[in-house]
Length: 461
Image (tube, rainbow, N blue to C red):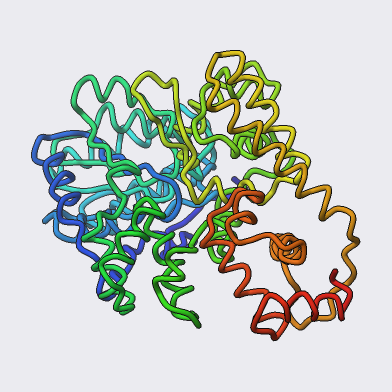
C-alpha cells in the first residue's frame, strides 16, 4: 500500500449496518436457528446462497435482535488487500465498542507482510479478550474475497477468538475456511439456499403485504413452486405483475425464465460474472438441456473428463445447482436458471446436445430418456429448418420482436397450435401464450391472422 491508511481515509459507509426495509417478511424460523448457534457457543455463522435469497436481510434481522453489539463490514474487492482488510475489521469493531482497537487502528500495518498482519490480529484478539465484550463481527459479501492471505487471517481469528465473540459471514459461495473441521466440532451454524427459500406462507406475506399485489392462494402457490421459493424471483414476478395487462392467473401460468426481468437479473448477477467462453459458463450452457445431471452424463455432453469436480465446484459456488442426493452423484439446475441458460444456446447447439444426451441414455439402457431426447432433437431440427429458410429483415417497430418471439411468430405462420409450438421450442404452453401476447402488442394486432398479415406487410415473414 502506498501509504498509511488513517481512520479518516476509511470509508465509513462500509461499516454501516444496512437499514431495515419497511414491511419485510419476518424469518422467525431462521432467526431462531441463528440464535441457537449463539446459545450453543459456536464460533461461526455461515449464510451461503446464490444471489437474491435474502442473505443480508436475514443477517440484519437476526443481528438487530441478538442483544449483542454488532460490528458490520460490507466487504468489497478492495479488501483483497490484506492490510486494508485488517484495518477495516479493526475499525468495525472499534465502532461497535470504543474500548476495542483504537490504538490498533493507528498502529496497524499499512503494508502486507503476513507476519505483521498476524501480529495485529493477535493484538486484536487480546484486546477483545481483555474487554470481555459480547460482539458479532459480520462480514457481508465475503465472496468478493479471493486472496488466500485474507482467508488465512480470518481462519486464524476463528481458531483463536475469545468467548463472547462470534463471526458471521454472508457469501454467495463457500469460503476456503476450515469448515469441515468446524462442522465436526459443532462450531458452525449454516444457513443455505434450501433454508432461505420462501415457504408458501412467507411468499404470501411477501407478495400480498410487502408488494401489495392481492394474489389468490392458487397464484401464490404456483409462483412459489415455479421460483422454488427464490425471493428475488418472486420479487421480479411481482414487478412484472404490476405492469400486467391480462389476469394474474394467466401471468402465473406463463411465468418462466424467459421473462425479461428474470433474464436481465440472472445475466447481470450470475452469467456476466463468468465471461464467455470460460469453462464454467460453457459447462452451464451445455448442461442446461438436462433435467438431471451426473458427472458421466455431463462428460458426454461437454467433452470434459472432470465434470464431477465441476459439479462440486458449482455446488459450493451456489450457482443455482440443486443436489439430489447426499453422495454428490445427481444434481439439477434451478428451473428458472436453466430456462435462462437455454436462451443462450443456438438451435443447432440444442439439437447436437439432445443427440448426445440420447446416445448416452441409450448406452446406459435408459430407453425412455433416450427416446425423449431423440424426439426433442428431431422436432427442433424440423422447426429450425422451416424457420431458417426465411431471412430476418430489420424490424420497423418501436419495440422489436425478440429472437424467441420471431420463432413463435414463424411457427404461428406455419399453422402450429400453442401446444405444438411449446413442444417444438421446449417451453411451457403458458410461455407460448405470453410470447403471443407480446407479439400482438408490438405489432398492434389482436389475432393470429392479423399478426401474420402485419408481419408479412413489414417483411418480418
